[in-house]
Image 1 (cartoon, helix red, strand yellow):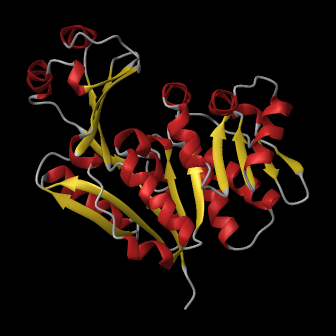
Image 2 (image 1 turned 180 degrees about the vertical axis):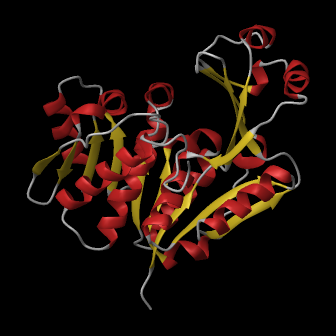
Length: 313
């Protein structure tokens, strides 16, 4: 029987977007435009400010965004993660069904992971992450060999290093191809050994230029490309308005991918969308150039939307 498409492992975080005033940001003792974690905040003040406000709930997380968009494009995909037994957890399950993603989420007693996104009148975003039970991965390892590709990111290493590594090791043993996103340059700098330990299992690695610099310790783009070429079968480096490049160990070559013209509304989730488009074409056996061009096109569509999904507004 032919294997399914892509199986993701991700922190099941839901974005809760709410409009607030400059005064309310100060009451929360937050620095506008930054991101922090709930353990560093006065949650009592947060609950008080949220009372009576309308919030937009958007299920997300980096691997989940990639999986959802690849499913929307037509690949058969599944997602492993954990949500709480609350309304936000129910919304996350519903979102997977809506996007035709095979739901392997474990529901645990407790609070679902969430990221509060406070939008001030100047459209600046200030964020508080509350990971809740989303870090408590319960993995059905029998699902991994059912898929051609296993996809996760460095974010999952930070939340649950042991389980993420166990899943990567099992996928390698099953000969399921592994796709890994380097996720965040600051995270790499703080946890470089852990990220390198995980990335060594991957056949395909995705990064933006800042993440690639942090990972390799190099600044010259040609040197970065050469270093990644030595490490991985396929390396994809996204460089924003300058497009992207793909390194292929087969033939030891670099492929330049041009950017698409786009009216940028929002760049959040563009990198995840690129991965979705790339992997969707890769599953179909297309050339790496075609994979990159399609990834770039899908990323550009996300840049023109407010959300991180192809079916968002």
